[in-house]
Amino acid sequence: MHKSDDVVTRPRGLDALLVVAAMLALLSQPALADASLSVTVTGLKKDGAELRCALFGKPDGFPTEAAAIATAAGVIAGGKGVCRFQSVPTGALAIAAYEDANGNSKLDTNAIGMPKEGIAFSRDARIRFGPPKFSAAAFDHAGGTMELTLKAEYY
Image (cartoon, rainbow, N blue to C red; front, side, top):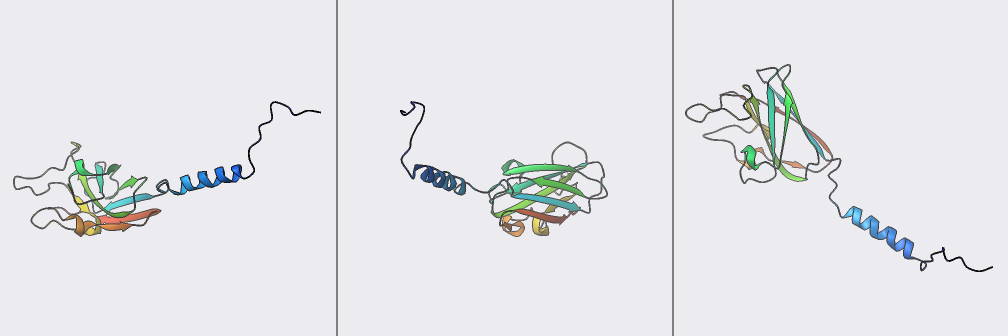
């Protein structure tokens, strides 16, 4: 009987080394697949309107929607709306949300810059001579699933 040419032999231990290398590669990736954030905003006035939410990971540009690391939207019903974010990073984050009462995908303001639509910020940070600072709205996301409830303000 002779060896078949179809049989490939590897040095002993190489399989274990490949398994360890694959496990290390998986462990070095950030675990974001199950890191989610659900944001409920209460006290909204216009059922059927869209609730727009923006997620921020740094102060630069907060709370301008264009500077957000992610955005989400939900429909307002019963005076509340929910936005859901997936693959949320860990660390200091902040949320800015507004009721888009007229459907124009922007926060409408009056002549002096005060919001004409309902707004909300994480940690219920408030407007005081301008929008709140990132630090006033920042919360820590340690990973996994997190739920926040914010209260809308009207000015």
